Image 1 (tube, rainbow, N blue to C red):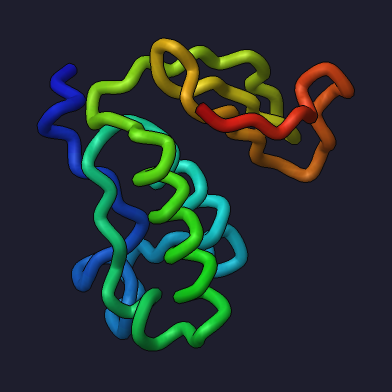
Image 2 (cartoon, helix red, strand yellow):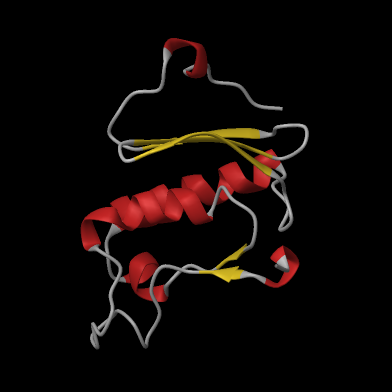
Length: 118
């Protein structure tokens, strides 16, 4: 496991795009980017998603990129998973925690819904 060398991606020209061999599910693209852009590794953003999927997707990816930069997430940041269930993933990224990430349709418990940043 070498997180400083781990490139994370959702789609590329061989998997998605016009070839559509093994595309990432379209309805999960933003959840996927929320994960890879808030976790360790070297995230790679697919050109098609930024240039061909419209302003909404491009703007949301931009917000996530700014969040990653502002939080100072490093390629080898530690991750503390608080909840990992079929409808909710909750983790703290960084040591000390720089970012709390909640993904999924279920709302996090009251004690985990606070917004904070370093």
